[in-house]
Amino acid sequence: MNSKLIIGNLNSPYVKGLVENLKKDDPLLRVDCLSTSYPRVEVEGIDKVYYNLCSYVWVKLFKKYGGFAWYIGVLGWYLFRRERIRYDSIQIHYVDPLHLLPFNLYKLSAKKVAAITWGSDIFRSVNVTKLTSILSKSDAINVSTPEMRAKVASLIGEYSLNTKEVTDCKFGLTPLSVLRDLKTKNLSRSDLLELLGLACAGDKKIVVVGSNAAVEQQHIEIIQSLSEHDVSNSFFIFPMTYGGNPDYLQMIKDSLSASSLDYSVVCNYLSDEQNAALKMVSDYFIQLQTTDALSGATQENLFANTSVIVGDWLPYGTFIDAGIQYTTVSKVSDIGKTLTQLLEADAPDKKVLEMNSDIIWNLSSWQSVVSQWKQI
Image 1 (tube, one colour):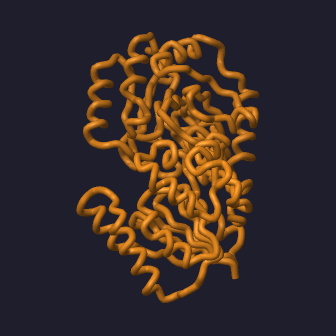
Image 2 (tube, helix red, strand yellow):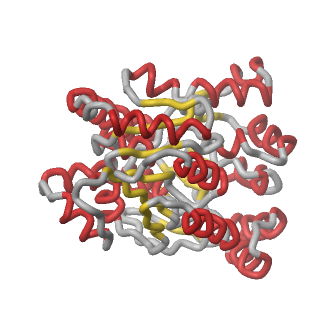
Image 3 (spheres, one colour):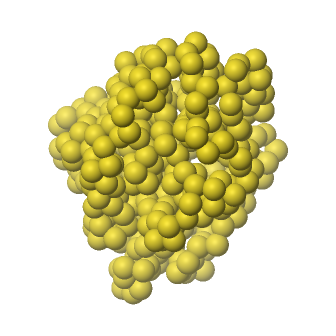
């Protein structure tokens, strides 16, 4: 029986979606997970979840990951786990420096160790030396965009990269299936807003700004630009359900309070259906984070027939190559002017939005991509 060990945060919808869909596609495939964070979600079909209690306690005490604590936990897992199988492959999801110390233990536990780059791990790393070492030691590397491949090549060298198994598998997006199901219900705008617990005047356009509370989303700069233009015919939603920190969240709230924007800040947990409703009810989605690989939130909005505005610095060549159409700005300060122009123009071309939706389904539904992940 073929077997895989997924090392990553099982609370992540990407890791959770991968595990569940691998099992759905091939029930005979053994899929285990060594979770970098304490699992707090129910996962369907997974064979075995391993815990690194030493690391979890460290994070609880010091509010950050500790490489040595993770290593001690992995050593305990390697020495004392009951089922001593040697996996066909191990996938490391998000190439974090904490994986360098136990990397040799990973190698002893599997025929192949694959580093699955996520984008922010290679573009935002503050410990390039450790990152490079992990990539160099890996048997296989997954890069989901040409820009990510170029970055990895710059770190370990083109020759070294060519000696490895290089794949370009993209994460499937479980929310696409939820969105598809919600579309079939034909809910009205008021129904969707009620599902979200929000109220908005019927004639206002709904604009969602960013997808989380991380400072990289550049909320403050966006609010400043929007405040310099007449956007009184818009209702802005700021999702703050994960990421960021309390101080930054307060800065966002203060900036909004001082502005003339009609807005709502969403901090409470959203169910899968509510997340889908947020995309379905949006007329425009603003994605101006500093770096990215292939944003799931952006793809979900495109699938939901939302008009998307992104920064032209984001490496979305995959979208362009696939024929997806969206609006770009060259700097954050342009967002107010650009949105105003879009609001004043005719309604977006429905055929273009529907085309975007079809392309995203073929590009990123688990149904389309899961078979590729089985090969890593």
